[in-house]
Length: 123
Image (cartoon, rainbow, N blue to C red; front, side):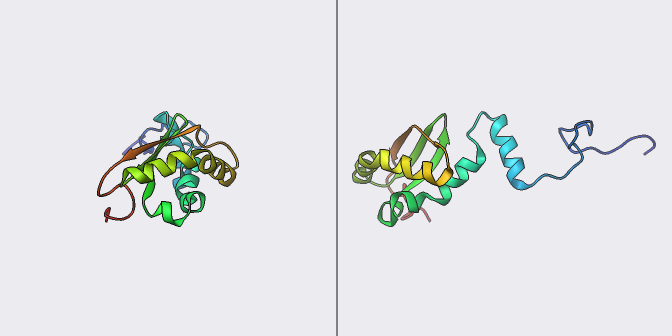
């Protein structure tokens, strides 16, 4: 292979870090930004601190599904849990903000997904 040099896909090697390995976190951050998504660190914080923010009883029946454009989408298995989350929305968002060190979402959108919205029945 005279004169040809291998470069990672999507990179020419001309960028200052083009030939340098990246951490998984850096790669996820880059992908998230390229798709117009939320900061990968914030998403990780939401998922990592979910039970702490909502309590074990709610976490057993509700789980975060996505976070985009300031909207945290949460899936629940029954309408009663949707009502509970809507009632606690402000407190949950405050707890997640405290965990992340900044605002993670401006509102929560709850989706009722019978037989699989929460941890029970999803496995």
